[in-house]
Image 1: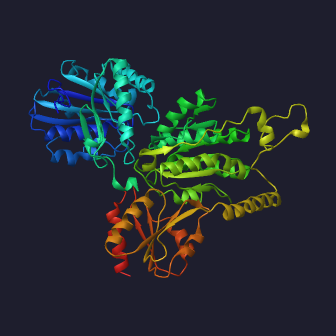
Image 2: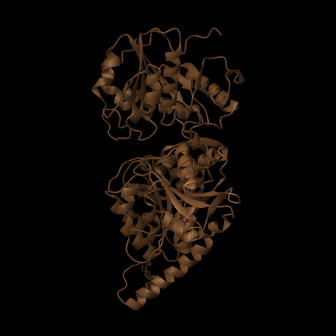
Image 3: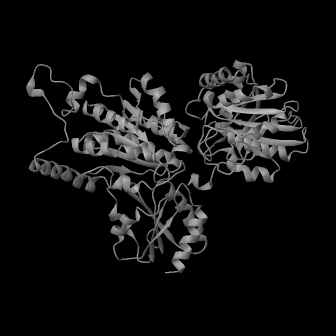
Length: 236
Length: 360
């Protein structure tokens, strides 16, 4: 296809930010599983750091077993097994993969500017040349239906964290009701957003249980989502 | 606003539905798993001509609601289980004073402070009440975000019509999950100068005309007067029992197993029914939407092949008391439950239901 890799090799730390409910966790889990399965692996190890301390349900550490089976350790809360504990306490071990130059790290930050605030304590590791801050955008979310709304969210996250968002991930969907038009409309809006803000569109996601990739006539990179965070009975 | 489908988190959609339904006032105190609601209201209500006030406790919030409702305001409040527990006294007062308030419980596990994962163990609290005296609260239990949006939107004028609190009982999963929804058209807030006309009982000031003075009270020291007041309330509740029962059924005609489940559990149960069908076992479902008044008449639709009625609940078995009233001695009644914030899988429900059927 000639498309560049989903994420550039020289960016060791990938920080996933976005409006809450934009799908950061689903994208982070799917991206981790995809990178773990690729033959070309620029780093010896791969880890997921879950910094989502504002969401009480549906957090990436709930998918720990799935990720660890794929060789991806998950770092996050102090309360390793107590995934439902509502304590905004992070384990000191979170720093291990961040300090390990041979480990690629995907950071799942909390939603909105308030959720991304937690990144500030890890500033020493978030050096521009090593990191790519990505914003996950779903143009079907009620509060980010237009590019000005999405832009306001991205700017709020940048202001709160002092980090520059390098790229956008088009994650426009309606769960199992997603139509091709949703993804394509999101793709066009994401391109517009990137153009207006001087960002790069990294890739577009699609729900793999709903579509095959050639149904989408999109020229850029695609990432299939497994809908790992979605229990089947939620769509009854 | 257009009728497009948007993806919303339950709590966001509940808050938006309340505003669109005409709720101009929100009072609340943060508690998980419904914190997105006060967050949303604090941002949205002031910019849309309403008022948000963070109370110092749930006790304060319900009494602020009492005051605003007495003055004719349209009020929506929300909390989660332990917070709703703190509001029980206020609900008794609101019922006695016949004031409209819409109250949402995004419920979690208990008792006590419990945990933050979903639960339905507030069924007794919702339908029997924790306040004192003879009173009833109208309670609806949605099973999807779209249904919750519709019920909340409808509850705002419904509370006015019945001059009584209307409760929406959603569990934490409904608050935290995401679903595509279509939002209803916004109703304008009632203009201040129209309140006296639309709500003639409201305390809107009497100026210099003492004949226009009105009283809202729950204290009645003369027992004859109090008895007459309670009898009058119960004439209203009797009408509500006739008019407000709501339920949905599925596959009852030839069902051997009849599940009764509300809210999130009804969705798990539907998946369990498919699993059972694959094993050659026919199962049906009664899904109460109104928990009070409880749809006892739904049980008349149970077919002749039924062997057992199973109440499936996220509690130690609370709705099962109403199921017993609905079924009587016609059929054996069993319980499938998880509690404390645990949610069964559909497979677990199917396995336990099959074991119950085999063990009869």
